[in-house]
Length: 155
Image 1 (cartoon, rainbow, N blue to C red):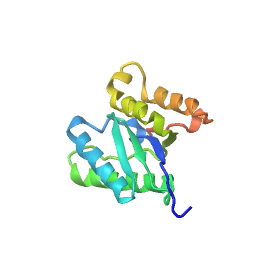
Image 2: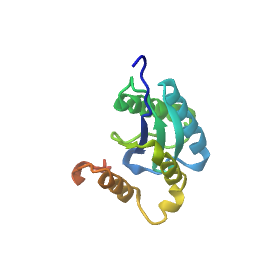
Image 3: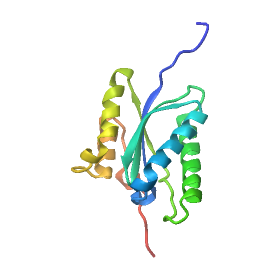
Image 4: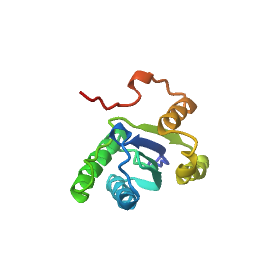
């Protein structure tokens, strides 16, 4: 072949540190736009973004030249820095260290978009922890419950 053709779609999920509800309605839109800009700078395209006050879901088409872990490291670091500089009156903001990234077939992209758009309704019955566990199980990913979520420890 003379060139490379890809359609690398991912459903990406990650939470705020300790799942604190910091993505409030007054910052949500701007944060999502900023995340979209960071992904565009890395030659990706955000097809859908949404979530809840404690986590974000992204359906994105990513470049084959970059590792997904590198894209998300840059995205999370830059968006937390931007958040803290832009919304100084808010509680300090950070993302949890890990993430979930699930490959999506082009034929299932609309279903994932709908899933992301319906987060509020979805979470009326299901916690983020349970949702994330279900995603891991559905995608055949083994995990150790002890290392699944960072917990805040008080001294």
